[in-house]
Length: 115
Length: 116
Image (cartoon, rainbow over all chains, first blue to last red; front, side):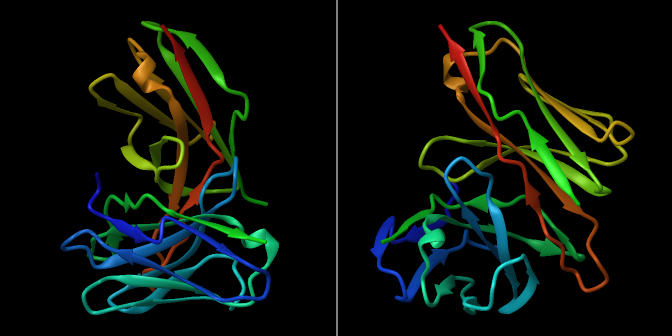
């Protein structure tokens, strides 16, 4: 186990709804990244937070937003859900020092189904 | 456009043999490349990292090579075991920009099945 936890494990929503996914980073980690993994695909980078500031973003629309809290836990919010948002959402924590990320530790993911 | 390619077909091998997985990329100049293992319904687990100035890295039964001329990484598992059956992902990381941000990019992964 990596020490990174995510909640909930599974979630079912309908189109147009909003969802909040949560991640608790491994102790001592100051960086969290969120990924979307569709079935049969690799994880796609959504964004990264370092010390509560967004520090990099992939090719995802603004309805994907996030927060990182002082205790380094994090949230991913998705508004106006679409069917294609159905996927496994992964968070990964790491330490960043000297501008360099170290090894990422992934959580088990949240399986989101949009009907 | 930038692409990372991993063989989408599953690799089936017999226990005890060496498994070799391939990761090819185009239009990238990665600072380093990582390999992860992912089991069904679980998050990826980091295995090895190799930097652009390294040719080879080893860890127990695992070996990774990185050829920046061919734009290819090979991942080897020697003396494979049924417990090694999983999906293996490669991921590229570009050098951090002055702002400190970058985008890590994963391949789709290759499924390895080791038969007893």
